[in-house]
Amino acid sequence: MTKYIDASLLSKMIISGANNLSNNREMVDALNVFPVPDGDTGTNMSLTFINAARSVEEISSTDVTEVANAVAKATLRGARGNSGVILSQIFRGISKKIENPEFIDAAALKDALRSGSDTAYRAVMKPTEGTILTVIRAAAQTAEGYEGEDAFELMETVCKGMQEALKATQEMLPQLRQAGVVDAGGQGLLFIFEGFLSAIRGEEISLKDQGAFASVNKPAQSSISTEEIKFAYCTEFIINKYNAKTTADKMRNAIEPKGDCMIVIDEDDIVKVHIHTNHPGFVLEQAVKLGEMVNIKIENMREQHTDILSGSESAPKTEKTEHKAVGVVAVANGEGLICAFTELGVTNIIHGGQTMNPSTEDILNAVNEANADTVFVLPNNKNIVLAAQQAAEIADCNVIVIESKTIPQGICAMMSFSPEADNETNTKNMNAAMANVVSGNVTHAVKDTQMDGKEIHEGDIIGVSGGHILSADIDIYTATIGLVEQIADEDSEIITLYYGEGETAESAQEIADAIEEIFPDADILVANGGQSVYYYIVSVE
Figure 1 (cartoon, rainbow, N blue to C red):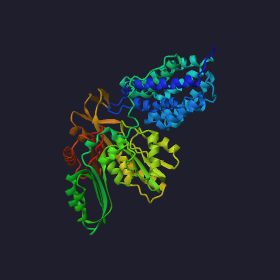
Figure 2: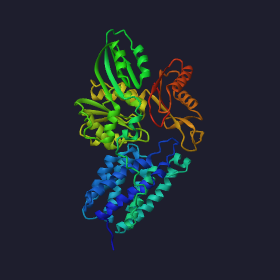
Figure 3: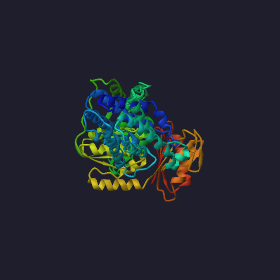
Figure 4: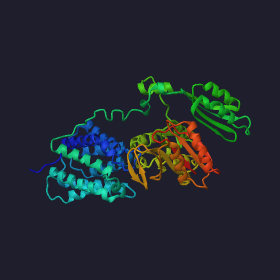
């Protein structure tokens, strides 16, 4: 008897596929060939597809097309990371060819898989073989070679073809061959389809860890307690100087011990100040010595944090941002980096970055909250660019994605941004500014490997730039200096060290002093980034 896939079975397939990937996401994460603590392909794909499972659970439809469209919409908005975006495009293409509301037969499944493959390839500017794209294309090609009419048997055949294609990825990309692994994205996709097959066989896969993603939609603030907020008052204002020749150095030195996340921008006739402190009165007393204060804002961050955690209806509501011609959204993590982007004029910050890739919907919400005719988006991470571009496609306003792939690129882009300039000028200036900066990160190796001519051991401190390991040592000091020596030269004018959580201003200054001896003609700057994952982010201009 010829078998078809109806709405009930399709829903079971989606849930089973999502659960199978979730149960194996750590294994997919571990396939990352680069030995840095950011192997998040499995997590990103799982977070993306768990949205599809939730969507079909909510609608309980008997219409196959409605189920397929719900999956496409949920994965599109929930897509995280490049792998999640490509996965969403696969199911976007699949849904387009599911047109019969009653069932999916073998012919329709063939068309759907081909459409899924073609849509995914079109979504990537430079498709690379040996990736998830290869595996979905194999699914489509295998399906087209099937001559029967049984959709169940076809799915069996498709999974076998995907398994063979996944094995072949190891030989298609040198880095996979060297590491002895298959492509992580392709493996994640196969887990989904094997979950589909289990449901077809009447053996739906259950989620092993029911709490695995319980906190996915909780605000980032819920990861810390109110007591952990060391400095309570976010204090910011502008000083109109009494004398344009007066500098803010004395005030800067006076208030620095009184808080953190301090930014003091001293311009010709004004000073912009931002600091988190327990003594806002002291800060204001120092400021009034320089001039008249305007735009004073002091907020109790502990109270805000408590309101967020409690979800209390009595919590103060955030006023809608005044509509403007242009706004900017940036992705960052770490108080210091967030402060830096805010002071440079970013309208809305998305808390995230490496290992915390925001979804397409997260970016879309931030764009909407910016409340502007045009919104520039700075992803500041190569794994967030596609999600940002996907958000731009479905946003109601004009969205321009500046393809910043590192924090230093994003900061340089913002330094060239002007709210008074037209969109074309800003786009040109921001892209040009990014081209003048070289970025590097210092982190630790999460596994043993051989890469870029270096023997890397788990726990080694490594300096990374442009996808290559440029330095490796057993201590942060030596690895950081080694990285800077590789990415800076005698023509470098500014070298900035953003130190992360766990590092101190003193240790950062020691490294800066050593770098100054090597590059005496460059200005060496130290800033508290507060970022996770990376001990140091290095910017060279």
